Image 1 (cartoon, protein in one colour):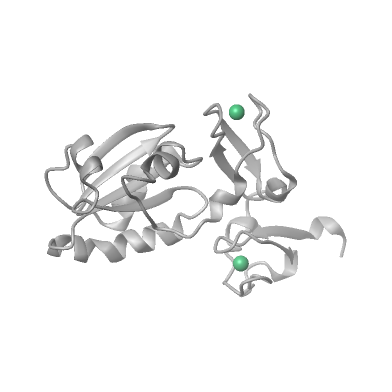
Image 2: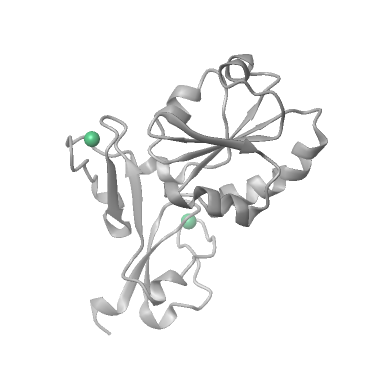
Length: 195
Ligand SMILES: [Zn+2]
Ligand SMILES: [Zn+2]
């Protein structure tokens, strides 16, 4: 078997690049670093996966092939080194008044923010859907949760009158908002234009 018969599969849990021989694609391949199951489905048809992330310096969207993520890729527009390590940060992240700017407004990925409150039963019912979406969309969409009771600045700034509520941010701006009681496929459809 020669080199071209192998695929580089990026672990969506830890970000490690795994080299998987072509004849093992579709088998239950595991990440060599964290042992998470690797998603090899896409590699059966497409060339290799790629990630799209914004330069946090100039806001330009850059497309980076998975095998180049560890090579210190630079922004095609301004030349800054891209923050590829942020693609694989654990999520959902806890968004607060204090970290909103760094985690949401300056995120290299589009962000879905779930506004919730501890006293809200519907929020509790929606939380597993948000958690699952956060897990599955890692590397493409950042998912954060904000407790509106403990983060009055955000609740006031975005006039959050009811929970659960969802906000979409991209490139430092709010692009959309909607009531948060959605099914996972509805969230996926809503977020698709931002990926
Ligand atoms: Zn891994
Ligand atoms: Zn740039």
